[in-house]
Length: 237
Image 1 (cartoon, helix red, strand yellow):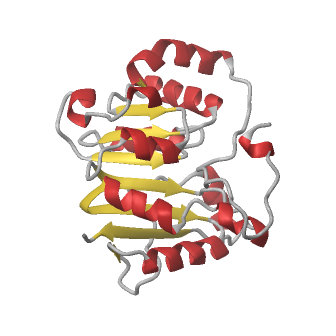
Image 2 (cartoon, rainbow, N blue to C red):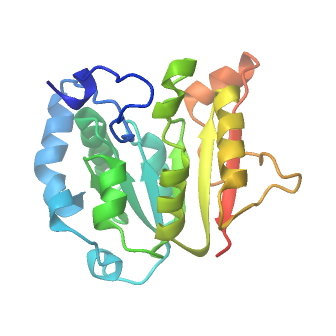
Image 3 (spheres, rainbow, N blue to C red):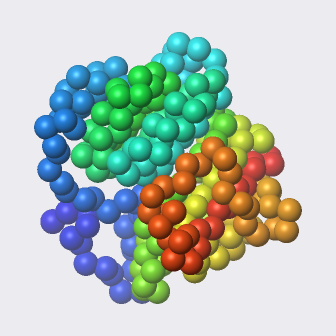
């Protein structure tokens, strides 16, 4: 029985830890499989290799941005291409998404990007040194909108504290969601978390920053009147 197949336990019993994802199986296209074969040796990072020396990995000393759950990687590659002065690390558990990301990086000749195909919670714990990140991005995570599933949401106190430790002082945690209720949950959890300061002038949400690309899905949602909420909290201590 897999982690995802295990039944939920009655209230008060031991619950399995929150993962950053639900495993989604999928078949890679020929292009994605080719990209994995050719570019994984130079752009792929392995959980089993342990802590990353950022300067050694990228061959320079530069600000590091880490994105959790990059999907098919289009926006992540676009950001890496637009900010060549920064180094980017992406984490995604969906194999075809990793392959698609490597394909896009090849097409745009992006060199300042590395990717993991693994659970983000374990990567943060085992592979990312404390105070080594300048920005952590969490865009459109699973909202687990049913009330009985809220405990599965990744933005919870333990995860927030892990992110805080990995950020440099002054580094930022940027979240975005198109579920208003989840945005309120994020705002409440982050506002109560020690060691973070909301960068929004009114203490709530911020406009979409220029560095976060507008996706086709998001643009379509805006035309239909759907909202997207961005939150940026800076590590203060």
